[in-house]
Image 1 (cartoon, protein in one colour):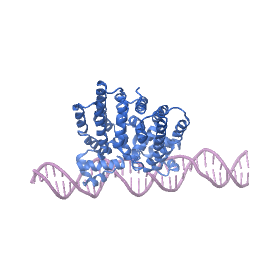
Image 2 (image 1 turned 120 degrees about the horizontal axis):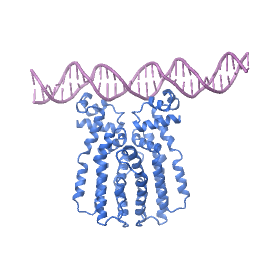
Image 3 (image 1 turned 90 degrees about the horizontal axis):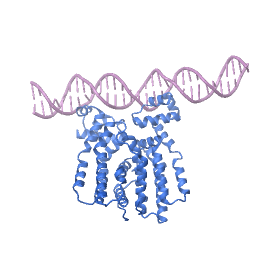
Image 4 (image 1 turned 45 degrees about the horizontal axis):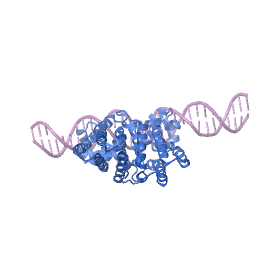
Length: 193
Length: 193
DNA sequence: ATTTTATGACTGGTCAGTCAGTCATATTTT
DNA sequence: AAAATATGACTGACTGACCAGTCATAAAAT
């Protein structure tokens, strides 16, 4: 079952959902096609299960670390940036993200699920950090609280870039995320580097 | 021919490339399926033609406006931000971008083409503006010149968001892009808003 | 021996791409 | 100017391959 999901994710990411044959998924997973249908009612359910299974406790850890930390908001933002850079580095999460963005328009259940479990929680975290920084007087601007997407955007782009453009022009996601966070902190705190 | 491309773009964007039947494209375009093959050797060629046809002179205008303008670099960045927000607003360009990001990994020709004609040129423009601002002493930081993706990212996210998550949580792309540019300018100039 | 789990040949339907033929219009002939 | 002929854009029924999902049968587990 785990093998089926892994094989399917690889193939969906590589060839796209529609263009992937379940015969190939079965072969790659080392089972017969019928076996897939023992665990997943349909191809679409398999897709949804893949997305659901990668959600896990990923964000929960970060949420707790940030809720518990007494560090200043700027440090929390750096932490968040690093967590996102790491998350995007993982091939599985990267593939799932790409899959969600590629097929999400056609499978609303997937878009909704991913939004609720990842996007929305990530944005709440960012809002919470900004609120903390504003409360302590550390930050002087609230744009990223109004548009947490501004903080997330580079991570999304890094993930997509690695799938679509990496062969044409490589991108150092870690360095970019670090530059992003420092840039943002400068704008937020008003301090010059 | 124009009608075929338009219909195909709509359907590709809506159902994905693989899942779109050429019979449906023909019906939507008001022609017979055979007619499609008079103009496009294969389904894939049709896809490539769609991407190629939306490139047009889009960026050329912006490039010239920016090259000619005597305005300070910060004003040029605002101009660029507005141009990108506008570009992302246009449903056709939005669909093409989504198509490129969705299918680009599978069709390297498309990824390469889009990168060369849009991404790479946009990044050059940003680098040029930052260089100008650094030269004049207006800017004090060069991160976005090292990672022009940081400037582009919110526009990409706005486009993807509108396709995948808009129904779940709407996003005001214009307001976000404006917030982004102002935030970035604060970091670049060191001035407090 | 019975239940649970797995298999893979098969089916019914789908779809990219083909091609023999149509017909409106243009050209040539009378 | 009327008839005869040629052109090629367009059509849509057809084909061959392909594939999601099924199910009768087999293997493994209990």
